[in-house]
Image 1 (cartoon, rainbow over the protein chains, first blue to last red):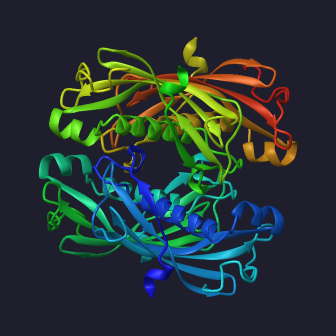
Image 2 (cartoon, chains in turn green, purple, brown, cyan):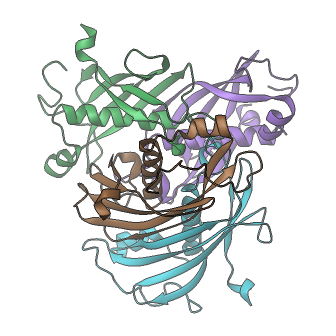
Image 3 (cartoon, helix red, strand yellow):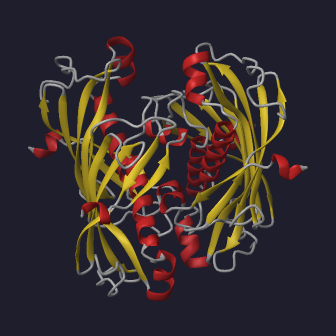
Length: 137
Length: 137
Length: 137
Length: 137
């Protein structure tokens, strides 16, 4: 079931996230999405710091997109989801949603992010270490 | 000719734009893209401040996407383009590129941004004032 | 006792917070400090949103300073404190510390922030509503 | 004369710099100040990139402070100054001002930033290479 794979984090909106239009500045949703992906990795036991220092691997965003339906505002608590949708060789793709108030709240934004695993020295794609993202991945 | 419509600005990369992977943080390219769109409007004689105070109109991003080919680094000078690709009713779409060094430099990122003109009070779409984006738009 | 007044929040360091020197970018500590002050207000039952909409009041930073002893890095969990040090008329001052790992962790930064309560229309100083910051304030 | 040493850059305020109070978010003035310091170095012929790769040296902020007199707003052009006020061993201090419109414009903020030259491997202070900041420094 979809809900079994759903992973999300809470993000509080602070002044730093908003702009003079009174809402969250559009680029800042991408910051929130990255926090969710980093926490998704941490929940799977993946330390990006150790991955870099011990295996010389890092992740880079290859493409991302986001549709905006409703704005978030100062003081809102947002639910930022990250769901692994595809995993092939060095690349993996997350589908991501931003909802106000919690997992069942109003849908504010919907998008995706495709990332690649790179050799941190050569910046060339490297297949993800087996089992890194879990069996269900 | 394509170059007739091409509009771009120079953006210098500072420490604030980079992250601990040594390159520009992915969300920050969206900040650069917005600077280019704001300058495109200014070059057409559109003051977003006046548009809001005098006509009660503002722009909101509806969707955006970006593909990342090569990373930018501290001290780079980037060429950020904004080309009006479509204009229908309340919506308009920019195609945007990020190149290192100038208009003919290496292509780092490529994407688009669709925005809508909104009534600043009701947040409902409002047709763009006629002639606002020029005859060629 | 000092510890009775100590208030702090946890902040996780993400890629967005770091720069190409491999550490947290200096201006971002000020973002963290503001999160702690906003949460301090919330813990006292003060909603900045309601204060603005119901009483037409807002807070503005008047001066701030920070000394940097040790850098924070990606993945660190930081303890950001906010302690009300002075309250006079429209102005109040927080002493703030940033420590790695928790309240007893290594001291990374130490500083203060003085803020003023303003009328949101005239931007003139306004005495804080009585009791707003609690009896101990 | 003071003006002989005065160095400043222009910074345009974009949406990314503002917050929902309608003005520039306080931490972002520190980003602007750093841009001015980086350009001050560039104007003296100092490449931070080369300094790191060729001499293993980098700069770190040791302490900074800022007083806020008037807010900047979207679309403002700000004049951000950086004046070398002191240079001793590994440390140097800039006095910095932010004015609206140009060098003679309204004073919005005033502060300073003290930085240290560090060995990029050991993070220990290292005396600045002789002549790096020029004779007048």
